[in-house]
Image 1: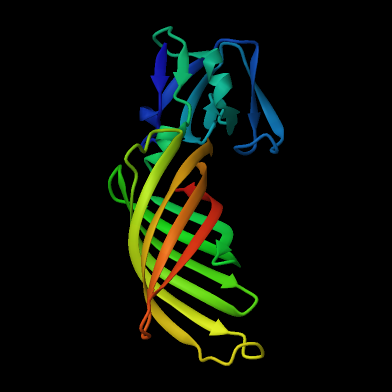
Image 2: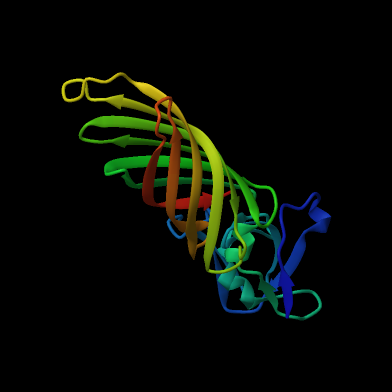
Length: 236
């Protein structure tokens, strides 16, 4: 069995070719089951494999018809060497090898409801640089946070992969002036956190996270703020 994983070919002569070895293969107008079937490739017909998009293969028939077939149907084809073709399935390892990730999350910031977003760049298998943005709305004040952090994943290939992060940022606090007579303030903060990625499917993971912010205030005492949140990240 031949195992294939390929991208767009530079020239037509370099494309993989295969022969249909089953009753027929459906061709759709686009890479998804929502696209209609417009052509059926019959047994013993030769097709060219142009490119792959997730679990869909763009193919072209000998008569020039071009469409998309599901990767599972490619097991019903054989190469010119007479061996059955098989295709590498997109899996967790493939997607975690991608460099960029973006995530959205929600949770609790010192008793206030918080929403946030992250943008990360994985520059090694274990280390990711990350930009963190979030906003919390509480009963007595609202807060906005922005920070940079370095994340370490000791076991990036685990389905449930723990991580640890260290960073710094700023916290902008705006008290509710109708309840508390204090001025707005902006404090520098140190960030220490831990959590875990939980691989779901394709390029998506669930992210659970705890952060401790040490706000370096201009007053005598610094403040510690705890944050708990959960969200979803996508790799690209």
